[in-house]
Amino acid sequence: MIQFDTIFLVDDDPINNLINKRLLGKVDIAKDIVEFLEGEEALLKLNDIDVNESILIFLDINMPVLNGWEFLDKYQEIHAERSDKIVILSSSIDYQDRFKAQGYKIVSGFLEKPLTLDKIKSQIEKYK
Image 1: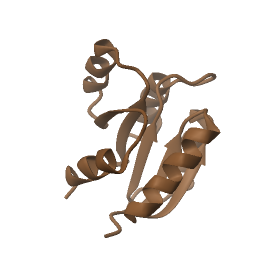
Image 2: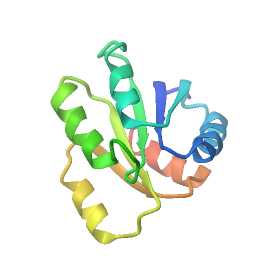
Image 3: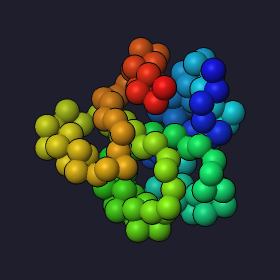
Image 4: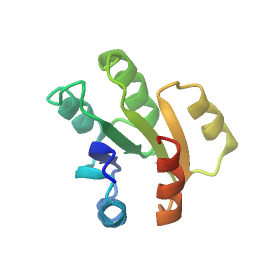
């Protein structure tokens, strides 16, 4: 059932990343799951990954240094040739955040924390 070469978990909370990594491991949709505590690290790592590799990125909005919106802006600027799937995974329940996310063509979903197996499966169905 593997659909992606790699999943990126971009969240400044290591506990969230640990839990999400375990959940995603249960659904077996990627060969590798990589955690990033800062968006900048994830953007730099993408420089080392072939543009043809299939990447799924779960992105938190509220992070220090480089927040999720800044990540999306830089991603579009630096990695415009990529066709990765980006899903915002946030504790935000603000309608404005959902609306803003829809303004990014590269965002394929918006999920509220906590991540669950049902939410993962529902999101993955969109990519079949």
